[in-house]
Image 1 (cartoon, rainbow, N blue to C red):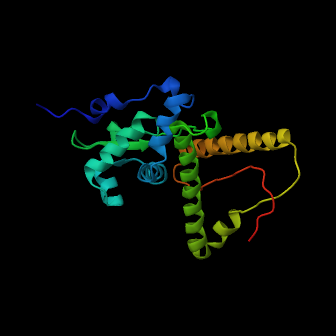
Image 2 (cartoon, helix red, strand yellow):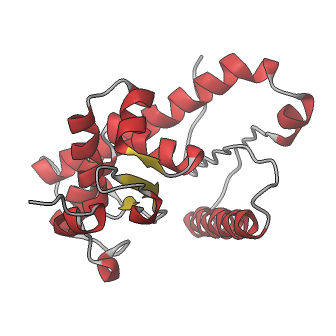
Length: 215
């Protein structure tokens, strides 16, 4: 029997496009579980930063077994984080994938205290924080050797000011809108100027009430 092309092999994991970004309840928990697996998030970022790649290349890049990479990509595909790129395959043996940007937000307190659902949502938040910490630690370790223009373009800023809950919420909204708008501008510019030199830039912002932090 001839091997089916990748576009047909992955139909069983194709997500419902009209639901992406609007998941709630148990559906949202499934998304959180899929994405906040360290290996799957690593694969997502490799595809986002280094571009589309076949399963075999990703296996060599990560040191994972081909079957393991395929399994993780199938899970990510089911929840809209990656998608097949069959037009890049040279033959039906190759299974190519690309990143698929999508929004994801949640509040652990939407789930009842002491439930499995609450624990899943809280664990996802903790893993998300650990992921950001690992990224910052890597930048602190390698940043001094980066070109001066790269160091000067980066920023670390924080403030501590008395604000109302409405003011805190407004800042959260404005930051989110700014980051989303900026990201879309970067993607559009990459399509019109594909040869421009680019760096993978991570933006991580948190807005929350905080008393004095004891050293």
